[in-house]
Image 1 (cartoon, rainbow, N blue to C red):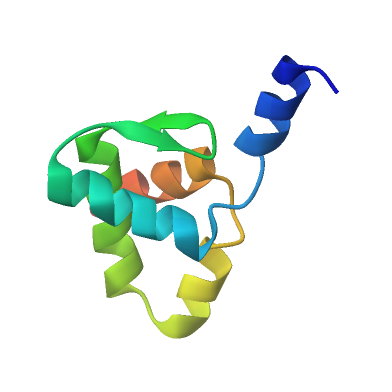
Image 2 (cartoon, rainbow, N blue to C red; image 1 turned 60 degrees about the vertical axis):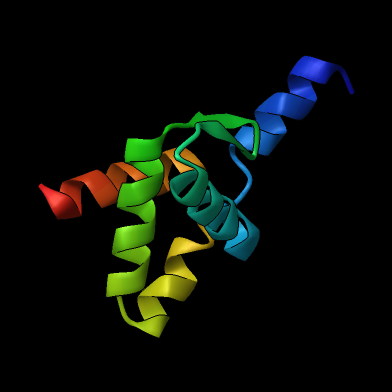
Length: 80
């Protein structure tokens, strides 16, 4: 497996609870960082965390099964 294939695999991998924790760290430190090989900025991380905290546990479980880009997209739609 090449490095590019590995990165692509990571990008479509579910965000998981660890990814949500990484988003919380981004918000706390006010710095962008990679979550599953996807660069996440402060604005996106803040939206993800805000929506994750607002939804019920059933929907939280659904959120952690989605890729980072899709979670961010859904978060922006819900906050708009």
